[in-house]
Image (cartoon, rainbow, N blue to C red; front, side):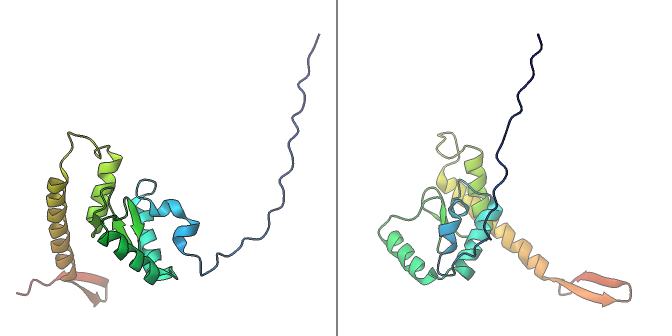
Length: 161
């Protein structure tokens, strides 16, 4: 006796409607919420979310007022981007990209909530030191100048000598 497999029938793909534009009055954080959550997004997403807040949000002024009210009552946002500002899991504002990246790395490594992890003041000291090093590197990069030659663009480091 031979058995024959029955064919599996699946519905044909349905036509989708045209893509709709998002209304300009709708803040970006309302239609792509995970990007504003530090625990659910990448570093690039967090940077992009802060940039969208600052440049594309129609209610940035109201959002900043809401943020100031929350911070003044001691109920700062936690682990999110709000009004183009980034906040840690503890509600502390992360002001530099290095601080944001450091926070995200510590969360990803599982150090948040770990009693053996570095304390927040020690982590803040390290973050401050990293920020100073970052600023020194930016200063050195600013000393670079472009020089146009027949062979193309060359870079010269002007040390002021």
